[in-house]
Image (cartoon, rainbow, N blue to C red; front, side, top):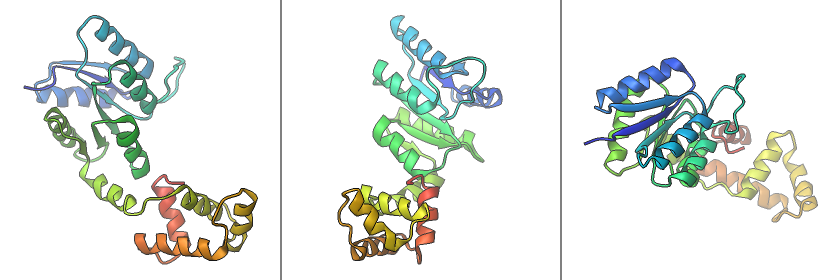
Length: 222
């Protein structure tokens, strides 16, 4: 057995066609597709009303704006709206986004079931993801697993993000204590700040603050 009714929300026609072929290969006959997030929510509501709900939603994160004005502008907003209507609906995000912080949040905050990155062999990856979540498991593209594991090897606090952001904006490390004091953020001592930077660099394997800043930007942490 496999999912019987799937909805694809994807604004690129070629990708849409490719997704439909992948589903057909898996024996999924009923696969609808829409180009807009608003339409996806409308179709899901209609299916629920007709007592013929979708089993699975496959959605991108980014949708290009055009002359058709939309209330829901992206995949994350769509997932949140859909979960309010149909909490049990399985969701696969199929996107080019590769920032671990963004992907991690999708699992933790929006309870998605799988994340497949648009890349080489993504059709094969998508088939594995569909099979995996049908069996009750979660799935994430293999090449992203290690990056998320690295990101989670240090749990960035609000304090960490504040001092890294300050440095990334051109503030000198010796100037950060005054900034923290002015904003009533503790600890504000220079030695505490230096210790925190050293801890982050040690855990993540960096030799200087510049590498730490680049890493945090790439990961979507700042």
